[in-house]
Image 1 (cartoon, rainbow, N blue to C red):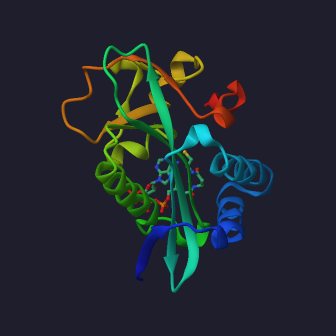
Image 2 (image 1 turned 90 degrees about the vertical axis):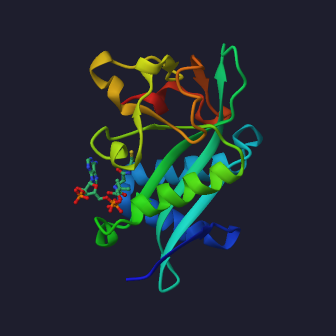
Amino acid sequence: MIVNVRKASRADRQAVVDVIVAAFGDAEGRGIAELVTCLLEDPSAQPLLSLVATVNERVVGYVLYTKVRVEDSMRTVSASLLAPLAVRPEFQNSGIGGQLIKDGLKQLEKAGVDLVFVLGHPGYYPKYGFSPAGIRGLKVPYPMAPENSDAWMVQEIRPGVLGRVSGTVACADVLNDPKYWIE
Ligand SMILES: CC(C)(COP(=O)(O)OP(=O)(O)OC[C@H]1O[C@@H](n2cnc3c(N)ncnc32)[C@H](O)[C@@H]1OP(=O)(O)O)[C@@H](O)C(=O)NCCC(=O)NCCS
């Protein structure tokens, strides 16, 4: 199976909604798809990186990286948030999610991004280089239950940044609501 990853265009919008709904299920997926539509229009999420994975030109996976800021840091860093990531169920476990993450990280590196954050499955993202962020002094935008703190993860793209910055991460305006930060 040949998988291609490319930047999403406006023409992909419906296909992206379909992938998200297929991956997350109807109820949750509709809300996440709407959130993505709003994030794509949110100036505070820019610069963002919106990627689709295709197989035979059919969109089967999607990832979005939006800009975040590390507040209170003594240093200025460029950071992004990975959310959401979705792969059609029938294409899962073939490395497509991983390819969307890795291609995204490469493009973000070229764009000068230092750190990438994610709130997600602590059994999944460490496969692709993420590790808990809270213990590195990088706090989630809204406090979480301590037992779920491993779900808030970070990966450095520019070596040497982790450990030198600390503070609370501030996300794009559209994501700035506690309901999005429950794990
Ligand atoms: C999570 C998701 C994006 C992974 O995509 P994928 O293309 O199947 O992922 P990959 O092929 O890169 O990786 C598959 C591996 O991750 C594991 N994995 C998948 N989901 C996982 C999870 N929630 N927790 C832990 N491991 C998980 C698989 O068991 C598989 O393990 P293996 O390599 O040891 O066999 C996909 O399952 C999905 O869309 N899920 C529904 C939406 C979702 O939960 N998105 C993430 C929100 S944080």
